[in-house]
Image (cartoon, rainbow, N blue to C red):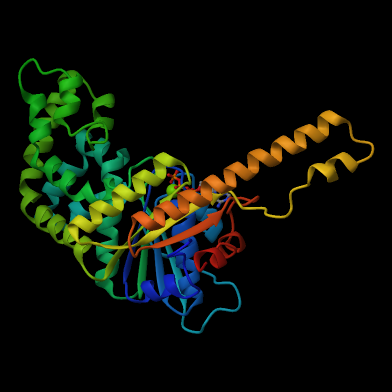
Length: 374
Ligand SMILES: Nc1ncnc2c1ncn2[C@@H]1O[C@H](COP(=O)(O)OP(=O)(O)OP(=O)(O)O)[C@@H](O)[C@H]1O
Ligand SMILES: [Mg+2]
């Protein structure tokens, strides 16, 4: 039985009730492509949509005709045939610029602002680490949502992260700004060893990039200075982070998990669903991407292979073996999908086949639409 597979209007029906969609999943599963495809599809359905994308490879930028990473929304020209009133904007997140703006908005004086922006510890943390990327995406989301210009904001999440990293990013950011982890460095004799990493909240902590780049006396001085200067803005920034964190639980916000058909990835999606259930967040569904397309009836029979004149026996044998492999893969993927649908209650299960061509332009994204709707 293949229950819960999307009917033509099921995804759009659920999205109509939402103003924010967070697209989550582990590295490389297709988050950026799916986020963009959904944003485009909803825009074609007549909604005013903005997609916040985090794609260092800039594949999506290419797809949407954006030329560079910048912190502003850009209008994307929609293909013909959409419902009137729809529009699509895209924003490529620049975490550093977003962080700088948060500091600028919360610093009480220009000196305070400049001291923070000029600090090396700050520059490392705000620039590159994955923890800050996730939080800054939420920060941008919050600003755009408050602006009220969009019916739906779709948020892509950074590469190489677990689905739940996004959920934890506000707290991680708070802990970081509290400075407890950084204070560890100020203890005499502290070394950035295993214990250090643990104190920083694990290998995904926002401070890890920093660890690798600043050492010794410089780090000590810059860290002290950083902590001192952050103290001034801590109060207002932490209030802000708490407000951002509350967006997760809003009935206006939904989560979509993207996964590959691989066991590990599907298990992660189920775990993510459980976590959201526990917190009573709105889980829209799972997109299983790169599913092996079934080919029933198109396999050559043994008799047909035997009847082929002019091909040698080893080639016929290889064709037969390839068919068996493909058939096994396709049926494995099909049963994974059913299993996922069973385990995630009334959430949607949407499958997108492994396509021959990569999604690198608007037409490519548009080609995903029929799969989104079953
Ligand atoms: N169904 C599909 N069939 C074929 N290629 C696909 C499919 N989905 C995505 N791709 C391709 O796979 C690559 C990775 O996709 P995408 O960038 O969307 O993944 P991601 O989860 O955002 O990755 P990252 O974690 O690095 O951000 C892209 O080149 C994309 O065009
Ligand atoms: Mg991506």
